Every structure is written in structure tokens, then in C-alpha cells.
Length: 319
Image (cartoon, rainbow, N blue to C red; front, side, top):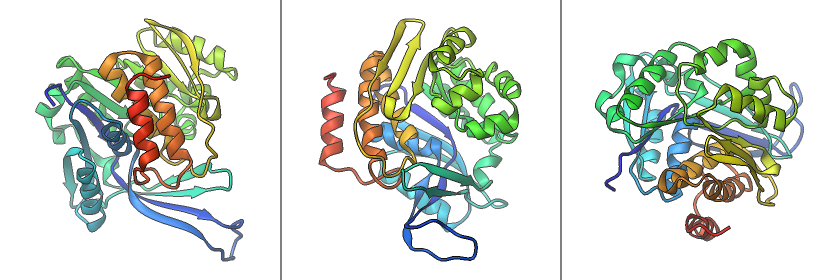
């Protein structure tokens, strides 16, 4: 791997996913499915870029606690072939995310503010960022400071070294809580090349209810960025400076658990786009990977022959 690495900066956490068999009632008890695994949006994207066959090294930067959960989360990254610069905190525990999955596969997340929220600019691996070919950030690194200053400084270092930059807006609810205009002013400091809003985040950012109107707004507000709007069962809508508006359909999988599907989509998309620069081909690969993930439980289900066949077929450019 001689190309400059893809670096994902942000949250590395421990996920606790729960899918109850029945409605949870105050004071009641129920059975269900529970899974514990390494997680975090930025870490998940790095894993999926690697799984999707990235032709370059994939690297993660983040902060964990000096605890067993942090050790396990890093070990899972390394087992996936993702290298890491991980800062360990003696003051804060490794972050934990609780995900509650409903019968339709939709998830509600409760994010604990652990060590991943405490990354500081002076802790960044400066040379790694200067040498990277692409830097991916999530809005979870922007919603408060720290870690906002670290994320913005990382973007400056990467950009000065010639890297491209992508951002996942992360959470429509957090955008609304922060305030749309405040969030947009922060994004104005990030020269993003690729922006990955989902349907809800597109509405929260643009203030537009219609998808086409929202895309018009994105093209005006971020004229130099490729906009990759994730629309769940309706696939993905893409438009950019050198890309006419096009919609790529989703797969027809039944949703079991949407946790991590957006991160899987983003990792696969970046793998394709950074390899050949064709946004439509990259989206065709990404919807296959995202569809596979949403039809299974957890953000990083074990790979199987179906997934490997999808990646092999669509990485080769088949429609």
C-alpha cells in the first residue's frame, strides 16, 4: 500500500445494543437480544473502509480511557487491519453508546460522554495527519469543545498536506440542540470535499422539507463539495461540482438493525471514490454494503460470502 492513508478521526467506543422482544414498560421486564462490541462512528467507518477493500492503509485517531473496554476496542480495530494512534486518558473512561433497536430496525442512541469527547489539539499525531491522503470527521467531534478544537486543527494539518476531507453530520437531534446556524458556522471552517448527510440531517441543516430543495440548498451553501445524501430505503442522492444530480437505488433487504449502516456506507463509498473518483460507482458499492449491514444485527457483523461477493462485484464497477 503505497498511497497516502485514509484517516478517520473521532469516537472509538464500546457499543451496547439492545433489541427488546416486547415494549419496554416502566418497572417491567422483558427479554431481547443484547450485543456488546467495539463501536463509534469514526471507528466504524475506518473498519468498513478496510473491509470494502481500501487500496490504501486505513488509520484511526481517537481517545480512550485506561480501561479494559478501551483495550478491547483497540484490539478489535487492529484485528480488522486498521492501524491507530490512540491517546489514553487516566481521567476519563472509554466512551459507551447504548443503542435501543425497535421492531422496524430503527435505532435510538444514548451516547455517554467518555474519553472520546476529550481529545485536545496538542494530543494529535501531527505527522500522521500531514501525511494522510484523506481525513474523515464526524460531527460528534464538533458538537462541543473539546473535542472541536482538535478536529478543526486536524483538518488544517491534513489540508495543508494536500489531503481531501469528508464529514458525516452525525445527528439531526444534536444539530437541532446546538442550533442550525451555530452548526453551519462551524462547518464554514471546514473545507469539505464530501458531505454525507442522511435525510433527517439534510432537513435539519437546510431547513427544507423536500429532498430536492434540500439538495439545491446544499449545492449553494457548499458549492465545492460532493453531496452524498443517504435516503434509507430510497437509496442515495448525489450531486457535486463535477457530478450531475443522480439517485442510486437502495437494495431490498429487510431492516433488522440500522446501527452503523451509515458508517458502513461512508467507509465503502470513500473506498471506491478515493480509488477511481467515480461517485456513482462508489455509491453502488456503498448501498450494497449498507444494505447488507442493515439486514443484520450490530454495526460490524462478521463478514460472510454474501458480503465478499457484493464487494468483489461492485468494486469491479458492475452496476
